[in-house]
Image (cartoon, rainbow over all chains, first blue to last red; front, side, top):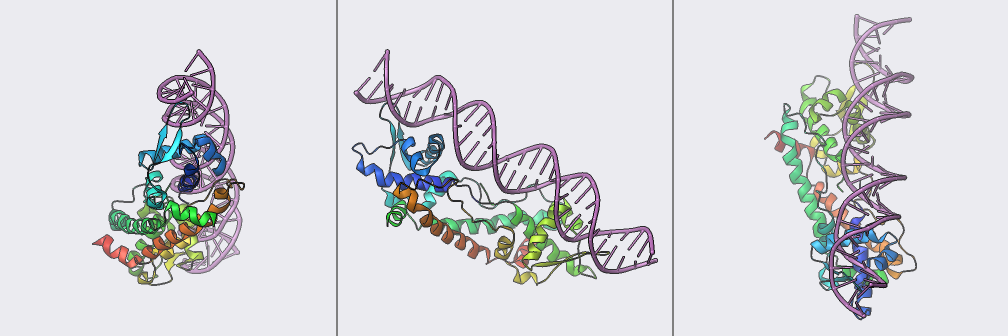
Length: 142
Length: 142
DNA sequence: ATTGTCGTAACTATTTCTGTTACATCACCT
DNA sequence: AGGTGATGTAACAGAAATAGTTACGACAAT
């Protein structure tokens, strides 16, 4: 199975914000507007932007004229940052049920796999850290 | 969400086979025996070994005294081979529904993300290719 | 006070995964 | 020739995650 599309929706939202916020006098956009570009429901956007806010990538304002804005320049936000914000689970799952502890393989293999998977996951994240939201925006509008 | 545990179950099965097959006169083991070590149902094992057979990593025999054996020495089977055999889907999913084609971001972002995700996925697989089933067995019994 | 947005709970439908039962198929063995 | 024990696979169930939707309270600016 794949990693969920949350990384995609989150990156799309940030990229759209990087494009549109500078054009607005207050620099603010709403979840409705983002949802229109992503083609989904505003609640889905608010949920995911909520994770990005916990990670410090965006801030939200409530009340009249409320909305969202970036906290950092898009050049400083990498896809690794986005991934970490919305995908807390390990990349590759271990056993669904604990393996047989009476078997040497069943007893010994989980930590070995955990370490190998951890290296693979770090390698993937390192590659994601080479791409910023500004990069994505530049290539997208090109 | 995480990649499914199929990679784990497949690697466990191959590691167990690498340990046990050499001790058997015919070099063959059954899905029941593997399932006992993994702690799951034999049908689950047969399904996953079926994928490994399509990838050429194992062979099965039917009839009396039937079972499974490796086709290659465990030193030559990497976790990348296992991953490719059981996880055909792209690592990171794109949009659940096509984004808004009237928006420049919605129109342009999918191929940009596809390429970035592809690099990340290749990087992860490269790291998996550095570990063989023989490595896993050695560290597991250590 | 009105307005417009966020924050969030609750619910649904869909999909995937894992486990299970059941049984046909097959090849070996007596 | 028939019994045996394994694979191959369909079918189904339960659990979990995802994505979408409705609803509504909280909040701050006007």
